[in-house]
Length: 449
View 1 (spheres, rainbow, N blue to C red):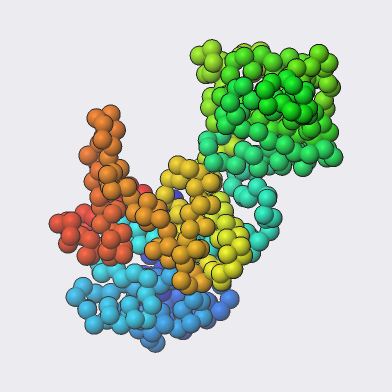
View 2: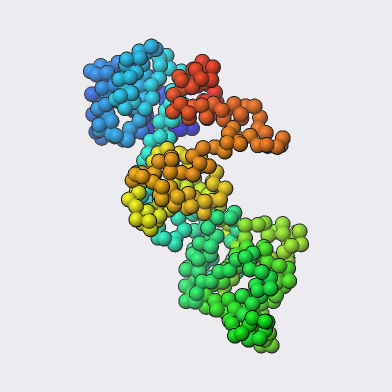
């Protein structure tokens, strides 16, 4: 059900009340006026997302009301209802800044779809206006987010950070697991360093030396002794990234080190104590790895004292735009370009795209966009092609394998929505291209909503 504030302007109180009653059933907040001057007076004191006006109202035309209303409230979306075939008036209304035109008699489905589009458009525009201020609250190395999914992560960091328990952070690649680990270290109040190592990036023969250290002569190239990361991180935090890729033999040595709170450097007979808090991270299912015998069960329970799950970007709602603005501002400052805003078309594509690479992919995308930008506002042409348009091999969301093929109703929906987008939301033109009458198109769109 749509939520939003709508001002209805119709000639006659009874008609006003009838239209308002129908909109109230959709969960909208509605006020009505029967003259253009009364509507303009109300706009001085009240805020609305949508103005729904008839083309002919006492005192002025709908187009004139549209022009005056937008002068007072530029963020308003104006929908005008007009009589069929009045092309001259339609042109006048569009020039006045009307968001949509509906031909009388207006069906309930058509009205609902138009108002929903207008409310979404207005909400997105308001969101974009607020983004720079909201994004400026976050520092360069901070976790950025306001969504309920991220609030849960922040709550876990606040609760777990001050303790000493080992923590495992899970999430898809690129979700920001290291930032979570750094936030946990910051909350811990530990004075020692934060150190991190990617277990998948270091060969097994070197991983033990990296973690536990070695003495001079322990192996061919060991020309001097070296302290391992566990000891170097004493008083601080050690992050073992991609721990699921650690070889089984190394897992056994890690388990002993965690249990004894000491390590034995390669080539040494002496054990060295350490006081580093362990934060492990992985993008894999460790419980399944335990079942598959690729990860030790005893080590799993040793490191999995507290579990923090980092949500994928697609599950973070408007955090996507907040992060995009954050990365835009950071890239612009680093490159030295006066790029300050995200265009509405860009925002829509950013929200619609799946972001399989998560936050890392979004960051790279925004850095590229800022680098290519010619104006102070990002345009669609600044985005990578994969973000600008749906995948060409899957234009209707259809896979290549039989088990990926969607039902016909889903293909129909995707195709109609693509046509609507291609014609800028003009339902009259879309219905002609699709070979459907307008009422059938409105009915389908309303049913999908």
